[in-house]
Every structure is written in C-alpha cells, then in structure tokens.
Image (tube, rainbow, N blue to C red):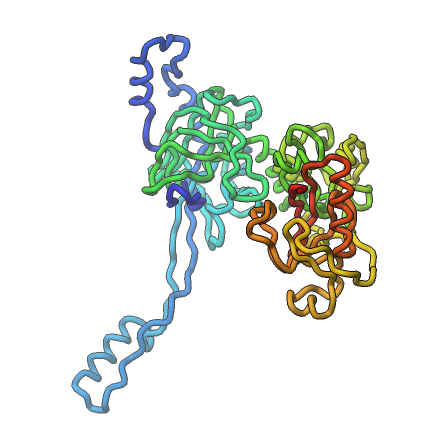
Amino acid sequence: MSTLTKISFRSVAALGFAAGLAALSASPGFAASGKGPDSVADIAERVTDAVVNISTSQTIEAQKGVQIPQLPPGSPFEEFFDEFFKKNGKEGGPRARKVSSLGSGFVIDPSGIIVTNNHVIADADEIYANFTDGTKLKAEVIGRDTKSDLALLRVKPEKPIKAVAFGNSDKMRVGDWVMAIGNPFGLGGSVTVGVVSARNRDINAGPYDNFIQTDAAINRGNSGGPLFNMDGEVIGINTAIISPSGGSIGIGFAIPSSSVIPIVAQLREFGETRRGWIGVRIQQVDDAIAESLGIGKPRGALIAGVNEDGPAAKAGLKTGDVVVKFDGHEIKEMRDLPKIVADTAVDKTVETVVLRDGKEKAIKITLGRLEDSEKPKLVSVNKEEPAKAAAPKNTLGLGLSAITDEIRKKYKLKSGAKGVVVTSVDDNSPIADRGIQPGDIILKLQNEAIASPADVQKQIDALKKQGKKSALMLVARGDEQRFVPVPIP
C-alpha cells in the first residue's frame, strides 16, 4: 500500500467508528440530534447481496532460472543435478506462474452488469465475481477507462440478481454519514461506517480528480466497492487510501457517482469513453497572474496554448484568454474546466465565456472528441521577422538574444522556433524565482508578440507609463508553454 506521501491504487472497511462515536458522545454540548445512525443494519441487509468480491488471475512469465552447472563428465554430482533439474523444469528454465488478486465491485443491473475499478482487473487473464450466496460467475469486460480508473463487467446469471442504484453525490455534504461495503483482505461482505471528510479532493491520480474523502475504513480489497449514503444509494466507488502501514488510517478516497454515471453509460453503450475536447492547454490563475490581468480575485482557467486544428482555435479562443464559464458552468479554478469539458457531449455546441482584455466575451464552441485528437500542437504566436539588435543589458534581469543559427544550435531549438531566447538569469533579480531558465523562449509580454530583444524593453517601458506593477510573459520550453507573472521594476 501507500505511504503518507504516496497514493496507492492497488486494492484499497474493517475498523468501526464506535470508539470515535463514544468519545464524541461524551464531549460537552454533544446534542442527541448530532448522533450518527443508531444502526445501519437495515441498509446493509438491503444492499449487501449486490456487492461482489472480484477475484482475478494472471499468468506471469518467470524470470530465467538457474542453468545446470557445467560439471566434468563422470563427476559424482552429475547424476544428482540431472535428476534435480528434471523435477524442477527443463534445464532449470523459466516457468510461467499464476498470481491472484482480490477486489470489490457492485451490481447495477439485475441482468449482470457490474462496476469496479480498472486497476482491480487490469492485465487479468480471468475475472470472477463471487456473490454472498456462494455463487461464482466468470466475468467479461464490457469496457474500461484508465483515466477515471473505472471498469464495467458482465456476468451471466441463471436468474436476475440483486442490484443497487446510484445516488447524487453532489448532494453529499461534509459530515454526512456514509457506509462502505467490500472485500478487505479477502473478508467479503465487510461493512464500515464513517462520514464524508471532504469533497473535490485532487490527489494527482489523473486528469479528472474529484474524489470524496471519507473516514469510513477502507483497506486492501475494498477497491471497486461501493460507498453508500444513508438511503442505500451508491454515491462513490472506493478507490484509494493514504496509509503509512498498508491499513486504514481514516483517509480514504472514492470516485463520486456524478463522475461515474456518465462514464458507465458510455462504457455500456459503446464499450469505450467518448469525452469532449476543445484543444487548449491551461494553467492556474494565481494571485500574481490575476493582478497582471487586472481581474481582481483569482478565477477561471488561463489558456496558455491553443491547438491550431482544435475546436477552440476554430471558434476563436486565443492564448491569454481566461475561461470563466463553460456551457453554463462557472469555472472557479483551472481543474474545473477539464472535468466539465470531458463530461460534455461530443459535437455539442456550447457557449464559453472568456475574459479578454479585461472584458467578458461569449464564444460558441463545437466540441470534438478527446480520443480522436492528436497530441495538441501549440499555436505559433509570432510572424517571421529578421533578427534585431540585442536588448539593453539586464532587461527584467534577463539576458536575451534573437534566435540565430548559433543560438538555435546551442539551446537545441526547433527549426521553426520564433521569439526571443533567454540566455541568462540574474540570481539577484525579482524574476529569478519564477522558474525561467536559459534556453526558454519568450513569445509574448502582456499579450503583445515579442519578435526581438528590443521589443521586451519597449513593452516594459509602455507598461510602466500605464502604471502597471506586473505583466504576464508567455514562455515556451520545448513543446510546452506557460504564462509567468513578472514584476515591472
């Protein structure tokens, strides 16, 4: 399992909440109305039969074994070694072996449709669903999605089986009671209870992180199992824990049902996901960037690159735009946008609101499909111009140069690279801690294209006259580009 600083997704309840509840009950001011449920037995009895244990097996090729020692003919050990290696594989060669793993899942359709985590069944040769009545059915994969760590399975029961329904995870509040059922450490049908500890957790598991954090005990084997609300509805899929010991310490994570439902629907219908895509590269709007843009409180997603063949480019979105609303959804921070775009139907035309030059602008975008897109190509922002004279010394604490053949070779720049190259960074300058390094290319300064080193000083002088204290610099490094807020001296 994981450590305190590492998240594990390989099979993650068995510890109750009685001790914590007892201590809380004894504390002053603990009102009766604040107690947890007297019992979850009725809920557990109603839904347990829909929770299954997932067992898998996988054939692993063994590493090359020990070869028969080269012994002199007639050696007294020759006969012994011949007999030993005959019993333990030809010539001591490698032999395949089978490994097993356990996880959890739950039935969402009486005909035999089961949801689990993708990592529970990844690379498996055989998958079985084990039910509470002892029935064991072979399962086939309908579809899987590695980005969200979800998989959809099908079994063929002789008669309809117990199923559970999804609830609305968006209605869950921090402090609401939840119940987890799964197969921790192979102990099937284990029930644990806790509360929602936090919502919208980003644990760097994937591009669409939006986890529910819970203190309901989750351990090895709980992965893929359901997290229920007190109405017996599935509001999450238990997926990961943080643990220094491999066991529960009360920090578990579940994929919210609001994210699961559309993916399961697509896997069921198409056997694959069909996510929306607009073709932009974005970055977080922090305090410094917000100040540079003059937008007050940080919000939205700053577009740092636009795929020249993507829907955003065709619709007219530009590098430097800040997306603040998409299809009616407010974009409070950067990570909101990828999730909302991914959940939007392919080919749907939506209204996108951006901040451009301090004003809101509504733009219509028709979404493409993420899986069909190539790797985004960042748009070129400069026109071809001849190299000009170097900038005045120490402009913004940066040594700058036009892109010459010598500079291109020194910093291994692409043949089509345009802009101004950073050749040095003054360690004592205010810009030194902004992550800029020699070899970076400055493309824009406060949304103005930079074609020569002199353009940098010219733009700085203009911003000073306007009373600006900071500006946004668009910097490219290889195929990546980002905005960097820089102070104006």
